[in-house]
Every structure is written in C-alpha cells, then in structure tokens.
View 1 (tube, rainbow, N blue to C red):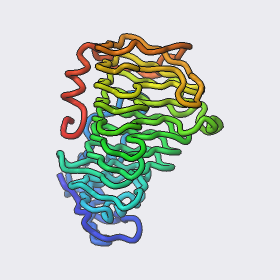
View 2 (view 1 turned 180 degrees about the horizontal axis):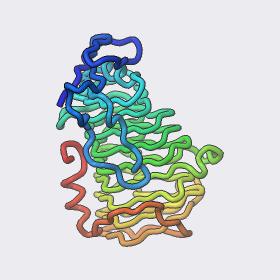
View 3 (view 1 turned 90 degrees about the vertical axis):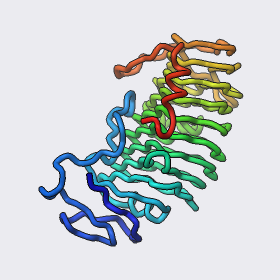
View 4 (view 1 turned 135 degrees about the vertical axis):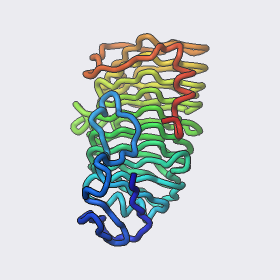
Length: 323
C-alpha cells in the first residue's frame, strides 16, 4: 500500500494531477497501472444506522499529517481524501472539515486537542480512531452537514460539548466512542427556536458508546424524530442520560444503565418534553426513567446486542485502538 506524505505547506487545496506529479511538496498518484488496483481504505468497517451512507474519503489518496498546518491543507483539498493523523495535533482555532473526507487516527497515536474539529456544510465525512482532549469549545461540532460517521474515538475534557450535532444536519451515526471526564456530552439540536431548520432533520443513531461518568446530554435531543439510542453503556452518569425535548422522538433500546439515577426523561431546562419510548434496557442500581408518547421505529435494519452483555461488549470495544 502507498501512503503519500503530507508534510508540506500549501496556501490552497492539494491538486492530484498525474501519476508522478508533485504539487506543493505532495507526491500523489492518479491511478496509474503501476499502483495496486485496490486503493487503500483507512477507515475500518462500515457504519450502521442513519449514517450508513457515509464513506468519507474512501477511494481517494491517503495522506499523513502531524501538525495543524498539514491538517488544514489536507482538509482544504477538493474531492475525496483519506487523512491519517499520526500524532496529537494541537489546534489554535477551530478547523473546518470539508466533504468527502476521512480523518482517521494512526494506531493509538492520532489526536486532536485545544479546539474544535468543525464539520460544517459538508457531506460524507468519517471521523474515526482519534483522541480528542481539552477543546476550548466542542470537541466535534456538526452543522449543516449530512452523511457523517463518528466512530471509535476517545473524547474528554471539552469545555462545552463532546460531540454536538445541530442546524439541519441529518443522517449521522455516532458509534463506539468512549466519552469521559466532561459534563455536557452530546447535544442534538441547539435551540428551541430552530424548528424551521431542524424539523424533519437530525436523524441520528447513537450506538455502542461508553458514557463513562459523563454528566448530562447523553444525548439531549431537540426536533430529531426518530432518534435511535441503542446498545450504549451508561456507566455512572452523573446528572442524566437521555433527554427528549421539543418535538423530538427518541427510541432508547437495549442499553445498560449502571449507577445512573436518571437514565432518561422528558423535557430539560426550559425545553418542553418530546416523546420517548424505552424498551429492553437493563437498570443496574439505577432509576427507571421517564417515558411517554410514541416514536416510530428506525427506517433501517440493525443488530441489537443483548442489553445484559453491553458492559463487557462496549467497555472492551469502544474508543481508540479497538477497531
């Protein structure tokens, strides 16, 4: 397999033009016969749930990045690109992710710290196997974006949200992430007054995530209907697990709640209650939750693990280095 070095400085996007071309210090391949017929694919597996169509940069070239400058240059490249993060990259400011990109950590070495990886006005993005620490805002923010898969990451210490999804985003899967050492964790829909954009959107699947002592918003949902929260491990969650609020419909299915006094409820703060249906969950030294209303089943097929096996399945499989 061939990986293209991305240790370079570019003022604009990377251009891939010929089999032996070097553009701005980036040597790229355009599919000449001398190369393997099958292109390397960095991301592992395929998404299940609402984000199932996300392929990211699959089929595009692979570049390795180790600095903010290199990451920004790669993300500014037009077209499909697979970006392998080989070290912890400290961001001075939020960095925008463009369409048809995979951003994948190398082994257990790849990480993003200091600021936000911002998926804005993008389609077809994969974020996988990265350690996110100490963001000055959200660790990952998704807005006005579709077909996104956020998978097998380790997220902690964000000043605001761990993974926030909002502003008419749609068709997203958040899976196998280890979330810990933060209070506000996963927000879906940012404001009660944003129904004109969000109604009919914000379809998200949250599955096999490890909420390890997080505080609240696991997730907090506005407008998304249905939203599918299944096979997650709620491990000592402090404030509450899931909140269904204004015009939302949330199916909470096959999860394991351990030492979690408030697994799920309707309404939150000034937001009125939405609908929430719970089924086949396990409550271990936990409350029973509040549910009400009706929620449609998801529009896709999925594999549901037995809820009583979720602690071992998720704690051993979630996070970085487990794909």
